[in-house]
Image (cartoon, rainbow, N blue to C red):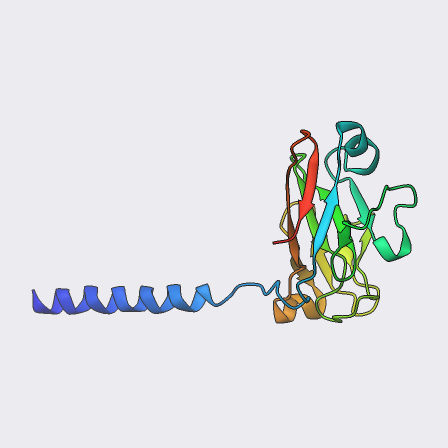
Length: 168
């Protein structure tokens, strides 16, 4: 009986160690500096023009470069560190990420959507990220090797019934 208890204790400890080790296998989405994000869609019509319409749709917002060109930027509009990538996941839910590559950590090095593979890809380090089903998870390249995910922003309903992006 004592040997059986010792055996179960060893199994329990092995599972505990295994669980703790696997918990360390996570991604780091804090490599990009925290910067304010505020993109407001005041009406459903604005959302229909500048937001994302359905699964696998995306839009880039870079205030300093006026992208998109006709978006009504105001003094209270902020687009994060490298800009904001607004996407729509495969279920039609909006998600938002900073455009800056977390490997390169420069405002001017921004991920771009690879339409052939439907992933975000860094033009410098060639890391790829899933922005349509997983929340900015690295898929390949140095980002996957080091566990660097895209910084994610919250997308929530505004008072007008459309959407507003706010920083985490």
